[in-house]
Image (cartoon, rainbow, N blue to C red; front, side, top):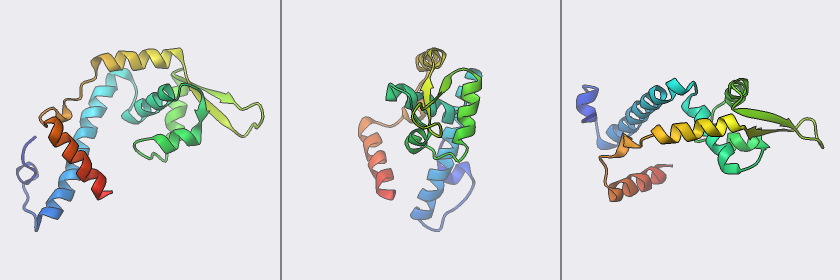
Length: 145
């Protein structure tokens, strides 16, 4: 990956437009890389995020809590969880006090998959940044939001 102007063969009216398009372009580039990485594991980056949320919670949590903690607010989060359930990576637990409430728990198989993925995962998307540059980038992205 190089210069955004060369990558998409375009000129920009100003640096703000260039920066915005660069953020979108880079996000799509990272997303494509992540999709390729997770494909052999049979899950998507969003499903990986759900599994990590559940592992981090350390206990069964409500579907709504998972949705709130997701990096990417997915309107299809319930469907993503259905697929994880079908693969026996998570399980649904009916709340004994309120049958309308469902809690989600990661299974042993889900934890094992996370361990396997962690062994092979690299964060090389931003390895060409120094620690200081990564901090500055993060601060600038926070400032945008």
